Length: 220
Image 1 (tube, rainbow, N blue to C red):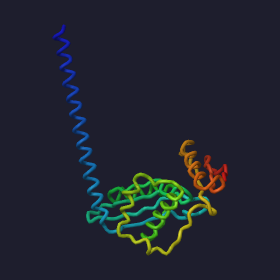
Image 2 (image 1 turned 135 degrees about the horizontal axis):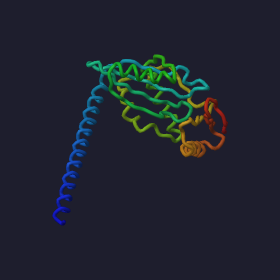
Image 3 (image 1 turned 90 degrees about the vertical axis):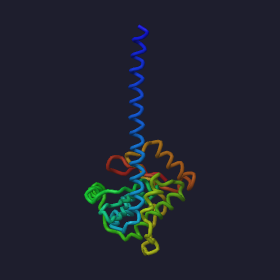
Image 4 (image 1 turned 90 degrees about the horizontal axis):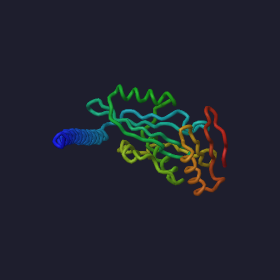
């Protein structure tokens, strides 16, 4: 009986060792793949500019949120796509990423963005200026950009924003306006309101909560 139990124990131990070995191999492969992709992406940051897009009517009173796209094309016809979801009324850079893809994937990504907004060509200098000034506006209010912003913004590289002659006015009607989206949790919304209240006082900003298709509940 003792011999049989020992045999079962050894069998289980071998299976466990094999499973751990497979997991370790998978982790190493994933790490190497991540490093390789990062190096390729860093190299692509030096590629020539390809296209730059902005959402039409971003600063319209009923808008305030949209995606800026900056892309570069490598000698191997790969597209490095940097996207920045901006809230120009309050929160600045809500989302950001910089990814290498082929032309078909790039066009598909643009189509997905255009399901929610109409993109128009924008001068690279103005794309950078808009993103960075939106970030600065939100930072002054106490909000940090998306965690990927630090890397994604490297796509600007040699773009000189002082070549943009446009000016941007953030907020709405002279004050920040937090538009609480359908996906914003009650906790997140309260954190935003508390931050704005501490920075500007209860009358220093606007708060609108989006309920289904209508904007309701003015605050401040």
